[in-house]
Length: 278
Image (cartoon, rainbow, N blue to C red; front, side, top):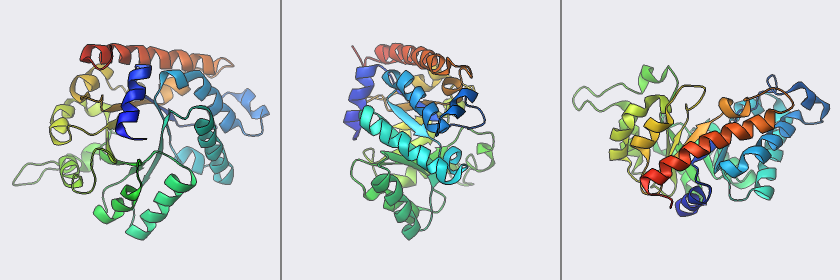
């Protein structure tokens, strides 16, 4: 999938919602344990209830890796189900990888060739050669961690150069422009740091931004859209817990769908106001 195809799907659905499949086996409804693969059954129900309101899904791999082989099998079944039933969905592996070049090449092979994700989150700390292998795949994306939504983001990401005053996250944005472009690189920008988006857009005006932190973490969708929307929307706003755990009863999927629709409806209004959909 390329930027234009992603934007067309955003226009078609009136949504730039990404649903985070942070599926914690300790939190899913107990009746699902009657199934052989309760994690997949949970994901399948969430997907069926929310797919018409979202353009992307983002499984967080930690929730699958923690279950060992069975968790990886649940993830693969989820990916296969999405490809077979919702081929228009943009699929992000929230893996936060990044290592020396030959290791990153193996990570890229795993997520882009073996599992056929559209994008993978990558940490920039080890520099260009740790990121480049992911950029060798056509119509695939690196989602580079730039400014995250967690409390500890302030420990390093706002550290400023003594002479220029440039913050570390701004340096990541600027230097990484030499590695890829808007057609193969996105950035993670936390919704809880929405006040920084105006400056971020001056550095990366054309790139898509993956924005976690709306919903349970308290980020404002209105603020994110105000400063982050561009001519192709340019935003994928992620919501995880507020949607997938909207209920822990037998109606969990119905409630997840209602929560996703509520977010989509707000996004539709924002896109309309911006003139991005008729």
